[in-house]
Image (cartoon, rainbow, N blue to C red; front, side):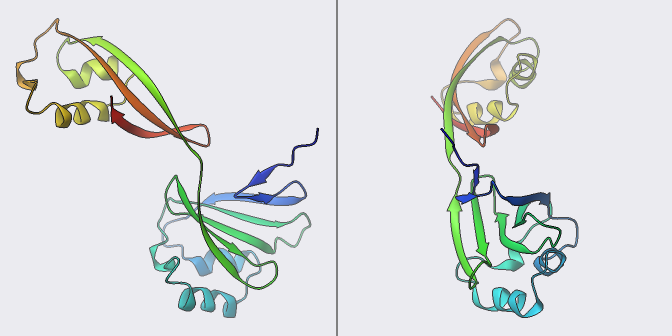
Length: 177
């Protein structure tokens, strides 16, 4: 059974996919001009699509994807800017300019971590391979029930919490269960 490869809802089997990150002092125009999008289209995007996504909010370090024909022209058919690991905006140049927002699939998995305090909760979580931000979340959730300054060497803990994954990669902590 043939299962086509897709990205952002686009079948990309016969297309050329370029993934990159926004560089320092790089704007939408810098990116799109490299891939054959003309100034008038870029100007139209900047002026008339603010209600969907304001291109002035493109940030250094965020991911983008350019999808082109599988030839040497490198002319963009689609441009996808990832607003954050979950959400993106898709510019479709194939017929007339179309713009849409989308969201990636989020997978939430429950995990358990156990440990023994040797110096601090934060150090103990790091020692057993936990996310250091878990210590901050625990201190917020249990601020009124646990005296975190009273933790002593040898105290044990067990925490059940959620981990959030997008595209098979760990993104961040979810809720404390």
